[in-house]
Amino acid sequence: TDADLPALLLGMLKEHEPNIVYLVNNAGAGKFKETADFTAEEIANAIDLNCKAAPVITNFCLPYMKEKGRIVNICSAAAFQPVPHINFYAASKAFLRSYSRALNAELKPRRITVTAVCPGWIDTDFLIWELNGRKVKYPGLVKPERVAKKALRDAKKGKDMSVCSLYMKMQHVLVKRLPQKFVMKIWLNGTKKYL
Image (cartoon, rainbow, N blue to C red; front, top):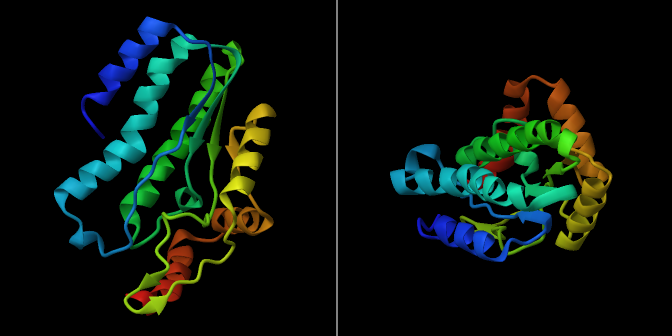
């Protein structure tokens, strides 16, 4: 979200003319709270980081990618459906997922693969372990190494999406088949104890 960094990156690329084999866009920010409590700055930062950064960086890097190049965009399982209380995060990751899958189709003639990585809960510092005095439980929690290995395997296979763990694959199938209002109701029932 630093306004000076895109120009700096573009200058480095022009100066060094690298052969980029892998580009991993791994950035994201999200907060769990009522949508009305977000400031205008928080909303703008979430959209800049989760939506704008990856496409801008990707466009800068594409001229330096050859056949069999891999672009790996870290999205989220939150991209599968609307998610109350992490509304901006989920919506922005839905954008990144859609962008990634469409770009994968667009770059097929160049034999460059774009993979949207859609993990569930990953055991990292991103997670909040206590909220309003209650210990937070994360169903389907996985280690980051597992997600990374699966993502790289799927990118190598040319898949446009990578979903790690049987738990998340089942969730993905369910949210595609169930009405979104029902899915949001399940989410809200699971999170109301933390609000």
